[in-house]
Length: 304
Image (cartoon, rainbow, N blue to C red; front, side, top):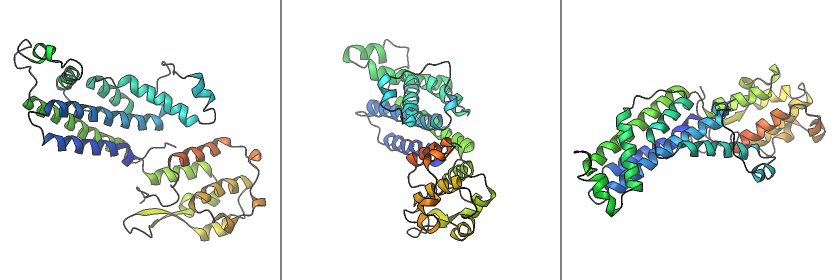
């Protein structure tokens, strides 16, 4: 099971492309340098956020050759919060590859995301070169030397150059979105719910297709939400094992705080210590820590 939702993977990407496009039409003599630097920051953050979600869903992509740097307090203070430790490792990885080098960032992104982009290497290097000059060396004393007559002819930074380079950034981000769609569009909330259910229950009595249905929201006809086939559960809950009752009660509790009263009494639910699969418990808690309303009201995409 992968905790990844395609729409969320590309959401920041789309928002930042729109922001960059909005700035592009407002470029003028007094703002083009600042808008160019900010466009690069949005470009970088878009890729890093997508990478962060990919690594959270596919942590095995992190190389064993690198040793994680964690403070002892990070471990001791979060010994029961594995999510925090994983997030800390991923954030450190993202920080190590996000250093103003667009080419290195894109090369790493392609490798970790398992995609292939068609950007022009020379153009991307030029983007980074001008961004780093403007961000770090754009003082009055250095401006003429770095961006003026002493550089190679035609290498000055100008309003027109800013337009060209910003357009390169949006083209790369647009292609990245397309590649991510081709590679990861199958990862929907519906798939996440189905994978979670099937990881928890391996009995034919609680098949996902028999127990879960996707219905139209009572509040928004354009939104689908999780529904429960109560009639099927009525006929099955008496026949499932005590551990299956325990896991089912956890999932049903996310659907409704009172629904368990329909199916179980406290004596039907086994004690936690008697549950042999702690992995399943941790998996449920991990998913609901990220999507607390997955079974109750959140829009469900990807259902057929």
